[in-house]
Length: 175
Image (cartoon, rainbow, N blue to C red; front, side, top):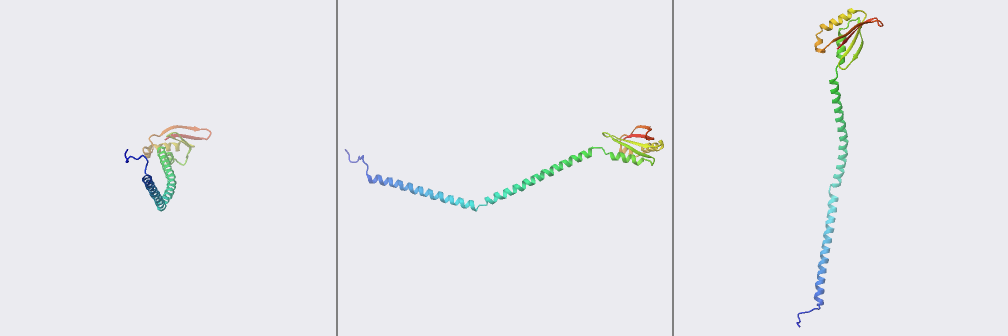
């Protein structure tokens, strides 16, 4: 048999290579441990020195202020919408004061407005007088008026009668 074939291992060479492997492994582990420690310390320093906590505080305070202004903006927009709706409503409804001013302009001293009834778009005015002459003057003045076409489409003499209880003539005009 050959002397080169050795089934039993040489203790010195086997131990040396195992020791070398353990030393390399230990050195690698220590280098990795120091690298990880160094990177952890560096991350801690970067986080401690970074403006991130103050930025978070600033964001929180700004968010609070914006939420306050958001409520304020909602209130302002709601108020604006309500004012717009009220304005539309006021503009769409008929102006009854114009009707009363028109009749009052032509009233004589002997006649008075007894009653005013408001229907959808019609103002019914009851004028009272002790005799018919002031009522006749009123109707003639209204017919001759230049304001009639400007103010109203239609004026209707609804009724003319004598009220025994009041002892007056009553003229009802729809404007």
